[in-house]
Each structure stands twice: as C-alpha cells, then as structure tokens.
Image 1 (cartoon, rainbow, N blue to C red):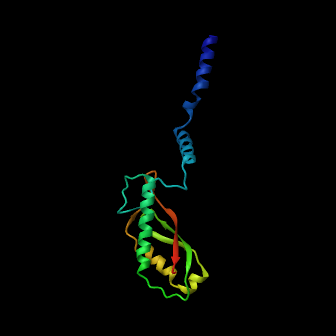
Image 2 (image 1 turned 30 degrees about the vertical axis):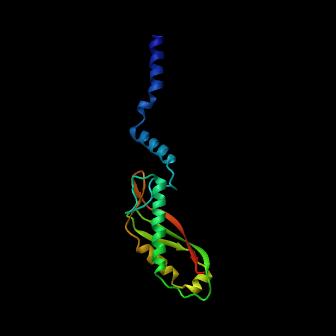
Length: 158
C-alpha cells in the first residue's frame, strides 16, 4: 500500500505539466521565441527587379545599395547646379521602405552651405527616391516589414 501511495504521489508530481493549459504553454513558447528575434535586422533586404532573391543576404544587400546609388547618381547627373563656390560634402538621407514596398523620405541632413547654394536639394532628393524602380519590401521570417535605411550623398563640385 505504501508503494502504491508513493507511486501515485510521484506520478502526480511528475505529471503536473499535463494540467497546464495549452494557452499558457503557447504563450510561454511565443515569449521565448520573441526573445530570440532580432528586430534590428531583416532576413532579406528590399529587392529591386534586377536583384536575385535566391542570392545570399549580403549579396542582396549589396545589390540593393548599388541599385539605389546608381539611380541617385544618374538622376543627379541630369541636374545642372549653378554654384557660387566649389562644394565638397557628404550629407545623409534617411528613408524607409514600408511593407508594401513604398519608399518615403524620413530625414535629409541639412547643411547651411548646401541650403544656401542648392535650396531645392531636399525636393531633388525626394524626387530621386520617388522615381526609383519598384522595390519589394524587406522580409522578416517571411513577412513583409518596414525597414529604415541611411545613405550618404557625396557632393563634389570641384
């Protein structure tokens, strides 16, 4: 009899997990999984049509950046700026690509000399981003997500 009571007590002690609800187990699993996700990084960068989604993450990042910078370079070459003095500077443009692949300017770093000599600079940069080819959004665990980026614009009029 004593063995039966000990055996029942042992089984009750070991099987307490059986009585935990599925909802509680699911919540615990989700909480553990959320702690492992790096929300500051994406699994796949936004992609332009010329980028191959089967490439490695770093290759896709490079393709995204090169396509973006090439577009800026060719678009800005089409403008003729009349400047009072030579200008050599680097400004940064912060922009985002939302879940639908739409691009928007978040911030353009300002510089007094650039503002004075090229007052339409912000509008030109915004237009450059708006005329980019269609882009697919960044992915995190297969789900489209909003991603923010910062690119340097090097101005050299020497």
